[in-house]
Length: 502
Image 1 (tube, rainbow, N blue to C red):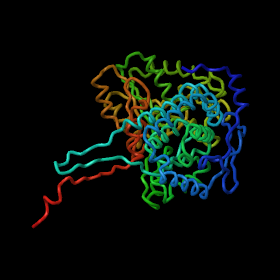
Image 2 (image 1 turned 180 degrees about the horizontal axis):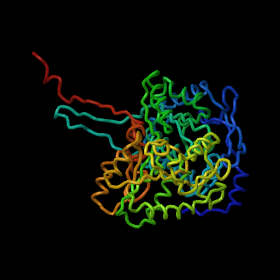
Image 3 (image 1 turned 30 degrees about the horizontal axis):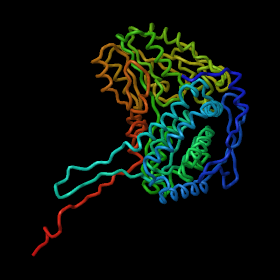
Image 4 (image 1 turned 90 degrees about the vertical axis):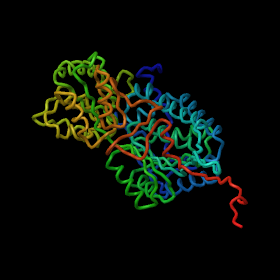
C-alpha cells in the first residue's frame, strides 16, 4: 500500500505543481484555435487552479485529421505488437514514477480525497495500462473449421480513429480504462476529458510521448460537451465513440451516430444499484463495512455506487446500527488531508442537485446525516424510505446518500432490486450458497458481487444491462472487442485445373 504523506506535505506539493493549460494535439501542447480559455476550479475551495484551452469544432477537426494521418501511415497501427506493448508498459512505469504528482493534481481538480487518489485511482490506472499492454501479443486470431479445400482465417483489425469521451468522477482511471485497450488494439484516439477534470489527462499525454507513443496517436481536446463532445460524436471521420457518463448524454451520442456516419457507439451509463442483505447474512459488522464503502466511496459519485440498501426487516435495525458506526469513520473535509474520506462534490451545480435530495418527504426518515457541512460538502446520509417510487429510490443521486428499503423475503428483495431502469451493478449478502447463486443469476445487472461490494477487477468485464449502457464492456480481454473489427480471409486451396470444364 502507498505510504501517505502528511496534510502539510500534500499542501506543499499542491503549491509547487506546474499545471497544464493547453490541449494536446499531434504530440504537442496547443492553445485552442480560437484562443478561448475556461477556468478550472478546485471544488473543495472554489479557487481557480488555472485556465484551460476552450477548444471547438475546428480543434476537433484538426485532432481527428492528425489521428487519421497517424492511423493510415501505420506509425502505431502497423507497429509490431511487441513494440506497442513496450510503449504501454513504459507509460505505466512513468505513471507510477509520477504517481504522487498525478494524485495531488487529481485531488485538486476533482475534489477527490488524496487517500483515494494515492491508494486506488493512480496505481490502478497504471496497472490497467500495463495489463492491456502486456495483453497485446497474447491475443490470437482464429482459423475456422473449413473444408479440406479451404482455409478461413478470422482476424482482428483496429477499428481506426476512436473518440473517447470521459466522465469527471474518475478522470485518470476512466482514461486508462479506455486508452488501454484502444491503443493496445492499434487505434488512434481523440480524447475529450470532462471540462471539470482535464489536468491529469493532459499530463498523461505528455508522459505517453515520453514513453515513445508516436505523435498524433493520442490527442486530448479540452472543452465543453457542446463545443467538443458533440462535434466529435458527429464527426464523419471518427470510426467509433466510447462514452462514459449520464444516460441522458449517452442517448445523444446515438443520435450523433445516426445523423453522421453510423459510427459504432459504446455506452457505459448510470446506475441505481441494489445491495441486498438477507437475514442469514454472516458477520453484520463486515457487511456494514461493505455497505458504507459501496454507498459513500468517492462521495457516492460512482455509477456503480450501492445506493439502495434492500434489507430483510428482521435484521434491519441491527445492520443500520453497524452501518452508522462505520459511516462515522468517514470524515468530511479537505481532500488533501489523508485522514479525510469524504471530499467535495465536483461542482456547485452538482452540489445543488444532491442537496435537493436531502429535502426528504415527510414519510421518509433520515437515520443519519442529512446535513450540508460546507459549500460543496455533504456528510454521509442514510434515509429510510416508505415510498418505493420516490425520487430517492428511482433516481441516480450521485452523492453520499444511501436509501434503505426494508423487505420481507428473498423473492421480494430480488423483485425490488430489479425494479429499476438501470442494471449496472448489484450485490447480495447471504450465508446460503445456493440462494446467493440463484440471486446472482436473477439480478439484472452487468456485475453482481456476493458477500462483498466491488466491480471485479481488470480481468473481468464491466458494463450494464438496460439503460446502464450497451455496445461493449470496459476491462478484461473483452474490452478489446469494441476497438477492433473482425475480418474473414477465405483462402481457396483447390487447383483450378481440377475444377476446369472440358
